[in-house]
Amino acid sequence: MSEQKIIEIEVLRYLPESDQAPHSEVYKVPFTDDMSVLQGVQYIKDNFDGSLTFRWSCRMAICGSCGMMINGIPKLSCETFIRDYYPQRISVEALAHFPIEKDLVVDLSGFIEKLEAIQPYIIPKEPRTVEEGEYIQTPAQFAEYIQYTSCINCVLCYAACPHTALSPDFIGPGAMALLHRYNMDSRDGGKAQRMELAASEDGVYNCSAVGYCSEVCPKKVDPGNAVNINKINAGMDYFLRFLSPKGGAK
Amino acid sequence: MSKRRPYVRSMDGWWKKNPYYVEYMVHEGTALFVIAYTLVLTVGVVRLGQGEAAWNGWLEAMQSPLSIIFHLVLLAAIAYHAFTWFKLFPLTTPPLVLQGKKVEPCAIVRAGWTAGVVAALALLVIVWGIAA
Image 1 (cartoon, each protein chain N blue to C red):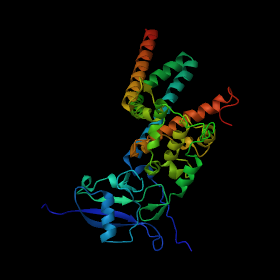
Image 2 (image 1 turned 90 degrees about the horizontal axis):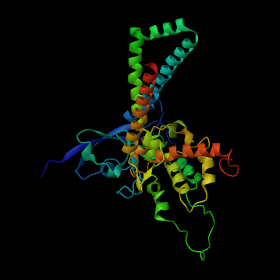
Image 3 (image 1 turned 180 degrees about the horizontal axis):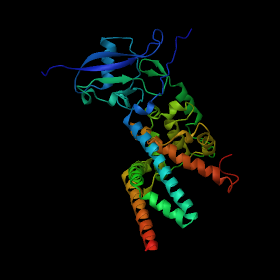
Image 4 (image 1 turned 30 degrees about the vertical axis):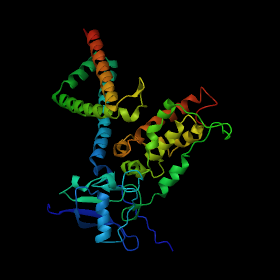
């Protein structure tokens, strides 16, 4: 048997009932090569301090719950391995640009409101009855938006985008990717409603193309591209209204 | 009563916290050098309009050691700006589909560079031709 390896995990703690501000605590965690950072944090909770609070669920990078700043980079802690950092210390902090609720848990209510605002569901062009059958879509039409359906709402892109904190009302990359996903869907007729939001003060023009959102996305959704395409779309809407009074922005 | 007290972290110095943000800020910052160079050229055009003596004075000023050092700094900064600007192409262009396949980001960057270099060379040849 090889010697048990120990890694130092520094966790930014915040206990709203007793702390005025977050503070760091360092834990020495024994680990094996197959352990994720999430498992390291779970080890701390199970063995050192049961009050440590964090979100997790699936452990396989699909639920989008366990996002954390790991050495300052937004990552899903379930697919980030301790062995890749050893023997350096790992620092773990709640996702940046969100208010900290407690320890590693952030307040997502602002994001949820933005998600609701973009109407992330199909608004049919023409409602069909059951008798009329399903909405038909070709593989080519599906290919138009499939990339954006991969979003798991893990909000790593918000933790990567400084503008989501500098302009807290900015719809942000993740919700904009979903806005784009529904706008691109051939069955959808809600584009005009959504573009009003995309072109508004809270919309795409808050983005200055930092591009880090797409870099950290664990599902290769490329939300930054969705935001930037909609700058073009919003611009087209603005100028085309002169040519097409019935279409474009209001 | 709710014990909630969400803590909002400061954004002071945010761009120093990650090398990616530093690169972004340097990219944005080097745009100022592009503006500086357009000002230099604009002054040249104004001096040209003021007659031969003014124009020759401007040409002479351009050849001073200080001006040459300034232009070398501009060249380095603008080259970096161009490099990072082309790198952003895949982020800002709508997805391109050729023969049913999505064009890879590196191909978009390469196409941007090719178009940029060809345009610059074409301009150089034309100006050279006119001057000759």
